Length: 451
Ligand code: PHE
Image (cartoon, rainbow, N blue to C red; front, side, top):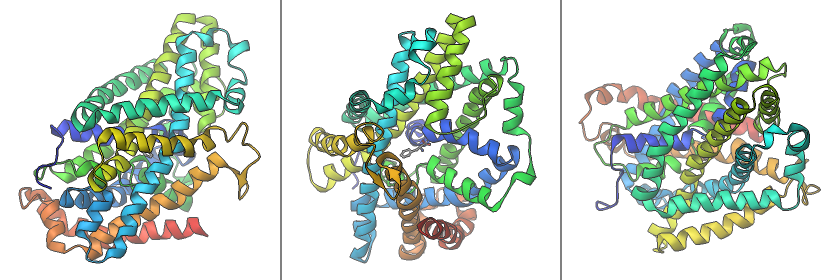
């Protein structure tokens, strides 16, 4: 695969990978999880989990992708001595396709709220905001329409191909995202009564650290860096041999963490100042915050509107940079293995995801009576993917690199053929993590989730 397209620059690689990493997980889960698990105390174990588990798995996926220069399926097919690894390749294509189906539903919600903010509906809270999230997601058609709009936008970006689509978009989106979230965080520091929110995030409370905190740290870091679903394999198949994969891993995880912390600083002071308990998930972004923005609009209409627009623009762009990376996985597979044109591949995946995602989009409305083990469709798909498919995919990839690939090949990739001396020195340690610690830790999580 010598003549395959590659990313144009180091920044393009990190922008695309950080774009995938930075998403809803950073905005709606991380701030809450740190607060609940002892603030700065949790940040320390989160960084440790990222360094000792997530980055080695990132490196394992990177090794598979760049060594083969192929999409997930082609990669394992090329590198594996035994054909049963084809299953892992297929898993890494199916998982992101399913995730894309419900991630785009949430992307659709953020488009709806961006629209509400832009049309100044937060100025009139009684009619438009109170209880409106509930009403919106239960509606028969609106969530479906916004889901399809978001999915179409994702397709449009990916249709541009690696350079004119993914790379160009990520190189603009990442700086814009940091600029927006920084602006929001700075503003948040000035909110009266917001200090409590900052304290919630940073004051270290080691007594809140429980064994669950460690599992939370691993799970959050894993999901946030977009591991276990073929994204890093696919993106790194577009990376040239001389890129330093260790630095790409550190860069991606670093940007991801900084963004997550800034999101916490942007959100929690406002939440505490409003006297509302911190929460997480859709309720935090689409219920609590719109309420706060419209409350803000009562005394300061212009400021409240600007903050609302900025926030939902951030959420929408962050969701798009992630959905683009999800879509590229099955699309790359179809182009390379099935030899279809990019546009046809996108059209086919669009139809499949539109059908799958419709069930999630309507899960709170017309389909609310359909449940799977007690969960609605949307939640069931989310739980199945995050608790089971993702860790399983990550586990199989790291086992593949640690136990199936030749050690000399893994080292050759990690050091870019001996080009990076520092990588050569830390290789034994990284290899140890890939062979033992990472499979053990992720294996325990897969089993624990399963039972
Ligand atoms: N890493 C993304 C986030 O933090 C989540 C994601 C999941 C991205 C699936 C791509 C695919 O939100």
